[in-house]
Image (cartoon, rainbow, N blue to C red):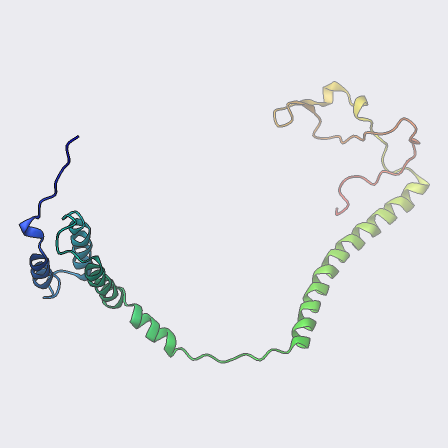
Amino acid sequence: MAWRTVEKSPLLTRTSRAAFRDKHLRRGRGSLAVRSLLSLCLVLSCGYCGADSEFSILEEAQVLADQMKKLSSHELGVFTMQRIFNSFVYTEKTSNGETEVQQLAKKIREKFNRYLDVVNRNKQVVEASYTAHLTSPLTAIQDCCSIPASMMEFDGNFNTNVSKTICCDRLSPTVNSRAFNPGRDLNS
């Protein structure tokens, strides 16, 4: 089995890396993003120089950290945004728990009252319908099996024949023919 030896590259010595960094990263050429990217590439590529090179990952990591800090402060404006955020005036709100509970209870009461109004209207309609039903039946009970086929047509939504004009009831055979049936639409 052959072993591969790593030779020291003359381009990747400590002094050449420092010279490159001084020339391209510290003199202000190019944007910070490009400089940070170059610094990152330099750090990553220098990892392949070999174990005996004068490479210090801590030094290169510090350079990269410095570049990232500059990127965040100058290009992204993190410190400027934080300064603006810190300049906002905040007033501390004192809350009265009793008042908030009363407001919440009022909102809940109003919501339930709306629902109760709907139920009461339906109740009145059913009671009036039942009172009228006692003197003469309002609706004849229509068994689903007794609807003539001529009154039904095929509906693809149900995949069967249906009637869109007649509603029917599934009833027990013991139900009285004068049983109360208020209908389907109580809101009309």
